[in-house]
Amino acid sequence: MLNLFYSESYWGHTSRMNGPRKVIHNLTESLKQEGIEFAVNEEKYKHNLVLQYDAKGHEKHSTIEQETCVIGPQVWLFDPYGQFLLQNPNLYKSMIAPSQWVKDLYVNKFGMDESKVVVWPVGIEMKPFKKDLSRIKYDCLLYYKRRSKEELEAAIRFLKENELTYNVVEYGSYGQDELERLCVQSAFCFLLNGTESQGIAVQEMMVRDMPMFVWDIKDWNDQGEQWRVPATSVPYWSDQCGVRFYDELEIEYAFSEFCDKIYTSRKYVEENLSYKKSVNILMEILNAA
Image (cartoon, rainbow, N blue to C red):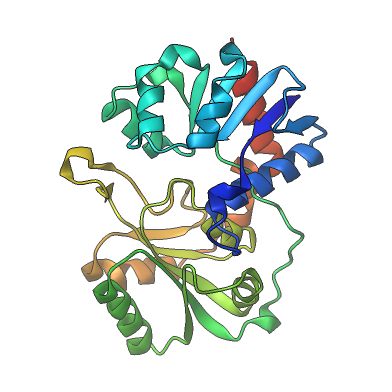
């Protein structure tokens, strides 16, 4: 049983489903599915989870029992509120990082105590799904987010040279229904994505058992060289999901390897990121001594 604290103004700049909104939606739905009682923006139960640490999150944090307060995953340690958390680790129980590489950033670059940072991914809905090959119209769904135009052109050039049919879906320019339709109609996903702290949209494609051909990235340096850390486009991953490569020169070889195997990305999500798995991890964090 827990109290959730968040504000819809955190994502108020858009009506589209985005990462912060998706975290709240999937968390509340997963708690309902698993029969965990929760309250929203009120102190009713033992545990407190401040999901967004902006001005409103900081204000709420000052009024609730700090020994039971877990903060995150929507924290930005570069802003004044994040700096406050860094300077006052005694004022909260733990901080959530959505994946291991983000935890490594907090620990290795900001000097946080490793025991103070916990990794928790929000759950992914396991919608009923059965692959229907008769519905596939295209070879590839090319998913593009925060990568260079040169890399996009290289990916398209590769698809054309290999006479593969494709649709390009750029982050922020599609609706959920459109993405779901193209997932069903495409044989595989070519993922050309920047670093992801969790990668919910990617994991929702995995739920549809899409084989993932990933032009991965090796590090995060959005704030400059001082803060560079090893990172990835797919922080939750195994070889059962697909094939990763890191350089344009590797595309042909990687694709040949990719075509030789059968993938079970849905099974990976079910075992590691389902609502049930996510809630179990969260309750362990909240109940930890």
